[in-house]
Image (cartoon, rainbow, N blue to C red; front, side):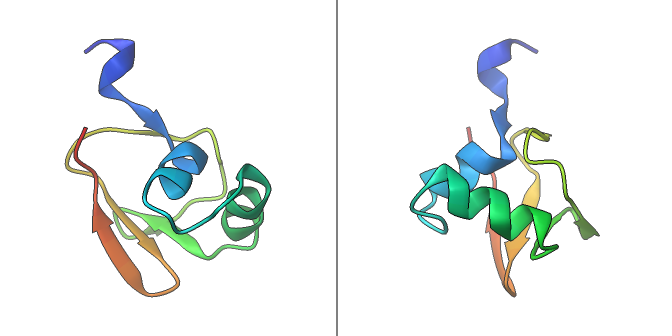
Length: 65
């Protein structure tokens, strides 16, 4: 796996349009509103890979890199 095969959680939230800024992505994550593969994730630097499922405020997204 190369570095391009991953994306940080906060960057992904911006990429899919859930958070317009990095600051808002950080708040969503820190406040416990984000789950990765069914587990609440509070690390905004969490590395995501293709196939991960991210759920934000009840809406789910499948990671495709």
